[in-house]
Length: 427
Ligand code: SDX
Image 1 (cartoon, helix red, strand yellow):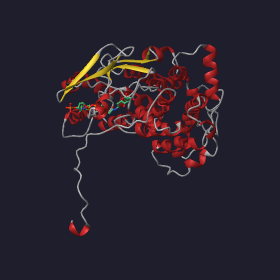
Image 2 (cartoon, protein in one colour):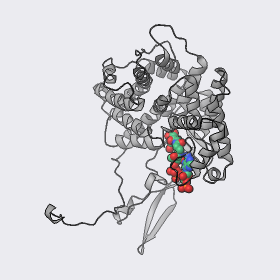
Image 3 (cartoon, helix red, strand yellow):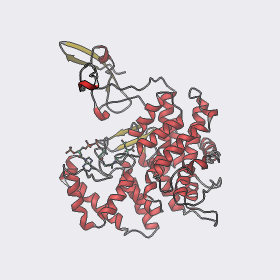
Image 4 (cartoon, protein in one colour):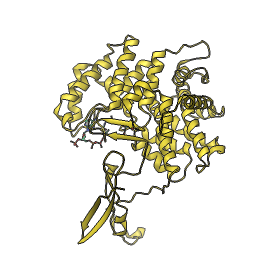
């Protein structure tokens, strides 16, 4: 705690409030004393609320800084890989060579799912949205792992984290295969994490597939860039669900549901739909005007962020990866990329966006890479959920392994004051 004090004068009273300082970032004012004095704080959307203490990730929205365990995302994207970043998020330090090898092997040995899981898929329509299927099958993991659901047991929490990180690619690929009527592909232990995912997505039992290493590297980078983002809506959902003592698989399923919204993880799918709707660079001005029109609900998907009031550092890395992948595939002049780059240029110059500090976010370029890799738009948010799993489970574990209380926000009530029941014949 810092030695700073905050005081609040109200109704002739002065309340002294504790102030806490973190390693970096704004100090926080502890307001729990307000309830005893008859007040709640009011902060719809939690714009100014720190809901917890955490050591995992730090974001400076004004500077466009994102740190995992203190390491800048740009350096992790350049020098690390997804599973190493998973380790960093879970254990708070980069692994040495033997720790990394052991972790990668542990994940590798848990990539298969119980074969009975495949029957769950048959209950869904083939045209079900992949996120609907993922909400169901990830939650259903709770039904299979009774031996690792004592959340007070550190070992149980660790095996649940490993199982979730290991099985998300398998379940995601099964979801995709189910929607296109192709047989599920089993994970292959000789492949890397991202090669395995692409094998399970695009391989088939009739031929030996060879995963393009450039695409596998791009996939790994996309997973890494989505790995964690402090207390975003879906991570806060996981924490709130976890605060009730719910099992980790149910909590991650809740996070998947929250991520699905187009204002959050669903934005990558919405960006591609928007670029397709624009269709041609000549129509960009029409859509920018719609985005600026107060009476038009249309927003420029992939732009703006609750925290970043500068470029999302992940968007910068994603943009470079998009150029690499499209060059590798000879798609440099992909019409959607041309529209995206023109849109970005306009948004960075237009007063409306500049004034509101609406920059491209992580979702703006990711969809272009995913489309180039051959992943259908409806699977984009599933990819985001896959990438974000280590972040979700690291925050869940940080909370459960520390001291926590059930999350229970209060409200400003503006409904009717107490009144007596009116019998039907008197209404
Ligand atoms: C993610 O929290 C995280 O960390 C999320 C995430 C993660 O990794 O977990 O980073 C992932 O969710 C990224 C965001 C993806 N969403 C989108 O790209 C959807 C489009 N963006 C917007 O819906 C919006 O920018 C939000 C939801 C991202 C942020 O909304 P806020 O912080 O509540 O901002 P706001 O709605 O109050 O907007 C402020 C102003 C408003 O105009 P005014 O009322 O001041 O005149 O900016 C305008 C908004 O109308 N605005 C936009 C806009 N985003 C905000 N106008 C046009 N297009 C947009 N995209």
